[in-house]
Image 1 (spheres, rainbow, N blue to C red):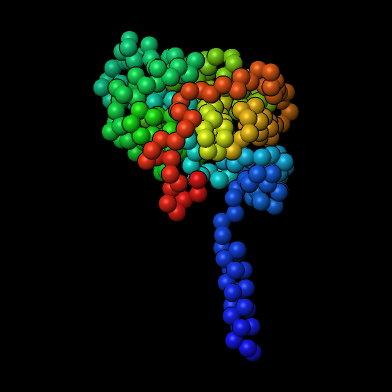
Image 2: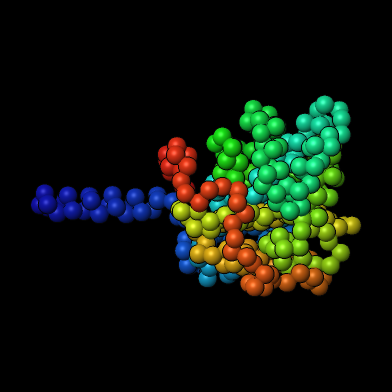
Amino acid sequence: MGIHMLHRRTAMATAIVSALLAPVPAVAARASTAQVPPACRSTRNPELAARMSRDIRAVLSSRQGTVAMAVRDDNSDLTCALASERRYDSASVVKVTIMEATLQRADELQRSLTEWERANVQPMIMTSDNTAAQHLWNDLGRTYLGRFLDRVGTRRTELGPAGYWGLTRTTAADQMRLLGVLSSAGSFLKSRAYGLKLLNQVREDQRWGVPAGMPRKLQAHIKNGWLPRSTHGWRVHSVGVFTGSDRTYRIVVLSHDNPTMAYGVRTIERIAQVVHRGLNRGRGAVQGLTPETRISEVSDGSAPRGPVPGWDEPERGATP
């Protein structure tokens, strides 16, 4: 065998091995069905898990953008995880973290929220008020917020730099842990019922996303984020806890690379419909898809559109 042929075959073999070892994006732009792996598992109901995985795969196969999701239903022991360790700019969903940390600090001090805390927590959640979020972010401080995230057990959430709370980097898996602080009966947060109450009172025009397809007799406790930036287009996120007399479950969907806010909302809502339908067979849906005419295409204002020096550079060795 000639030396040139040997070098050629060696190069081809190296290329094949590199291709096999390269990470496959969970959801590429216009991802094929084959690129989206089955997402759900359940020891009690494997048929439900298989069906929901197929349905999620079908939804995502025709959508643009980059999507991560997580689902947890205690009744069926069902969990779904799709690219759940991928980091995203949090946008306004970080306000759930700020709220929980504020409630936990009051618990530790064995007191109720002060009038000032309550006057900021309520608008921050119910109307997504950014000034209130900034007040609480500054008051809590990065050291306390970091300790709170450690207490929750988040693994890849990184607080935004300085006052840029909307640039906190987070994952679907960590958002699921943070929702568990509010939904779990064994939670360390004594005032979790108050937190759930506020999330249930988010104003009407911000109740899109994961409630889509929600059946009757369930309560939705949600927070959304919607932020366009100079890279990765629109970040559109929706996280929620759903409670009823006989069940509690959580849904998290994070996304970026959306061409418009409306496009990201529709992707999230189609995923949510699949999850609600699978977990509530036989119950009628009460909330449909949000009409595009009701989606404003105006940023939630949680972070600047342009780059933040020292922060927006790609993470070394990490998937953006």
